[in-house]
Length: 560
Image (cartoon, rainbow, N blue to C red; front, side):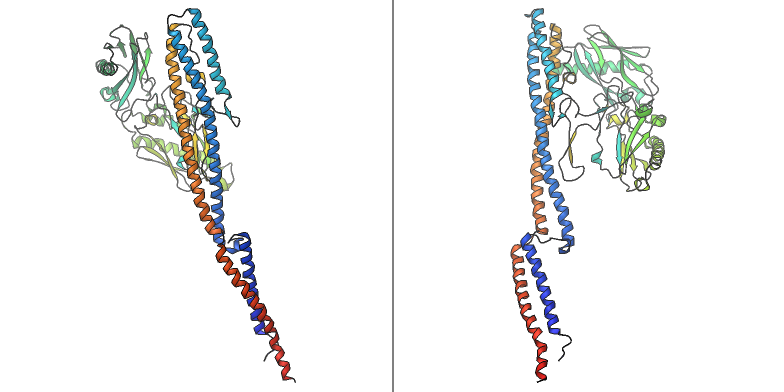
């Protein structure tokens, strides 16, 4: 028998500590309802749980954001409802003023009311707000960015930015030439009717290689007369009208279109403008009976299109802003205009050989700009050079660090990219409001509400003091009503989308909460079972420790 070390007591003491510790943890879990109260309980589980908690709270806030977005859109839509009512009243007054039973004094009185109604439309547009943010004055509409020839200064993201973050669109409403079908569409107003004429560019030999300018009209008059009269016949059949055919003649590079009914004329000038082909720019409108509009100022890529801003631009207007690895890099492309003139291909897709020259120049400018940027920032914030190549009619820009890519596409399916922007076109960049409808970055929904005031609606200058003015006003008011209807329809679509978003966010939050609960929360029944076991073990260990402490006393019996 040994008395220096009571091994039985030591073992029992260790078991008692273990049971007491387990019992303490069980009591902590039962009192908090959590399986993980500290990182030591489950390190991996804690990390997973905290990430899920962040997502859950983000989803719940996104749902509230969507609710706020609906409220904002409802505010705007409510204001436009009143604008609609005012426009309907204005149209009613226009129809009334068009009637010749009215005297000049009557029309003056009508026009007075019209003036007040226009002021009210503007007041609604200027004062409709949500949380002090103006809604229908154009401040949250698509932003128009234009250079000297309406060439846009645009940005594109490369690396560490998703494609969804690049928000650049091109308004191609005036760009009808050089589409995939090798056609150009011009709208001619003949005897008061707007007639769309489609010209097959292949039939006009100057466009066969995409490089020649229409320096004269030789040989084109007969073909143009055929195209226009075919369009007139089509229009007559569709609208049950009897517009007379036109005659087309040529002289000194001019094409003259003569109305068959009124005899009035309009001249279309084929100009050579340094490689920028003004396909159907009008030099003389003549009378209202015959005039040409629509394809005015459609250029080939001599103006540099979407790559450089436009031929002759300098300073800020000639710059493009790129985002590379999260850093904004501004590049002056004014020196590359000569290179981009290689894109004068009006009827075929841009050739990779021509684009390669510009790609080389772009890469040089890119990396020079990056070097200049790196010289001004700490090493940790510097970005690597990019690589620009040509693939399938596109500039492919590859980030130097994470190899992420973005591209600028030149393709006849997107005429605005191949052609320089038309004189009356513009680029839209940014604008609108972003509703954060997800728990993470870039999970947003962009909403734009255009300017709904009289100037933007086209009714600012209507005058009902004459019969002619009243009749013209009715047409303009019809267009304004259509614009407001379109905007209200868009707002309604956004609201419906947000409602579905809220439902989806709620479902996602519920399911993620259930998953997080399985990781973090304690199973009460199971833990009570563990607590009971540990309590019994603790009590038993205490009793056994008392017994173990008594064992060495047996040695005293040997001394008696």
